[in-house]
Image (cartoon, rainbow, N blue to C red; front, side, top):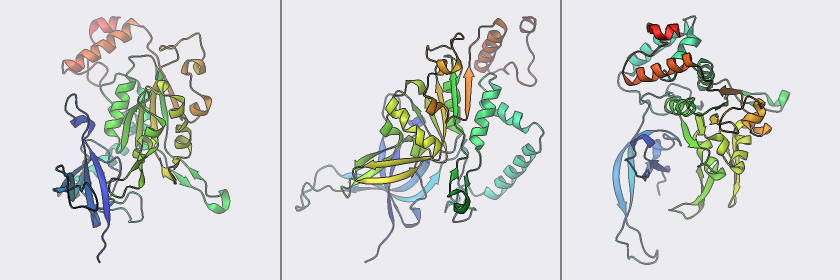
Length: 364
């Protein structure tokens, strides 16, 4: 007998490629030998393989088969799609490192691109205004909100996770991921910021608070189609491992779904005890959440805590909390309107370097 490593991968359509009015389709793929563990949950990949059909027996003891066959893809090659997204895997890292990947899929001219990117990164790092320049380049279509962009920039770069020694501190682990909460009035670009971060982040899931459940965030138990045994399917927090989990409408999330975030935000793990399966999954993710105040709009007569209306145990786990207020002012409203019209008219928005401010706005 000859044994080989095998991995079953469930491939689902990307959200930006789903046809209008349809649900995302899924296909099963079989990976063998060196292709095992190349694709990890949450990655965007392109698979090259052979579509095979497998007959289904009506009874395991009989040779009668159904007219409908089970289809799967026999994988020959896996390529990770990284166009416009940050990449965290590196084929040149040490094999024991968690960033190591067995295949370097950057292209044939990787050496020249790597040298150019290294020079560009060093040139940006030598600039005295590197922090402001990177914050300005983050979501340029969103007007102002400079402080919010700086905080999200820190979240994307993240900190350094520290594993303390077992002799001195009992082996405690300090998280380096930053959790950010955006609370503000409707129409202050909260959802647009979340969508932009979801597109840029190397791995992550975008979900809404009303459509999320506790099981969908952590993991759920299902039956394996081949063996018939119970297996775990990862949820949004586990799929966002080493990435950013964007949660919109955070205030409308149910209490049961919100309670599972306590362990994931502080310990960065998800503990499961279901159907005889007891395990702890990694959820080393940064959470970017947006919420509306209690009365949908910020009430100045109430305190900040009363306006946010979130449990103190959950609020204390957010490292950065931003209040986005829509204050009525003629000058700022005109600047915002001109910026939005400039985006549609393919003109340089007001406030960018080199743009001239109209005379009526300057005199306002």
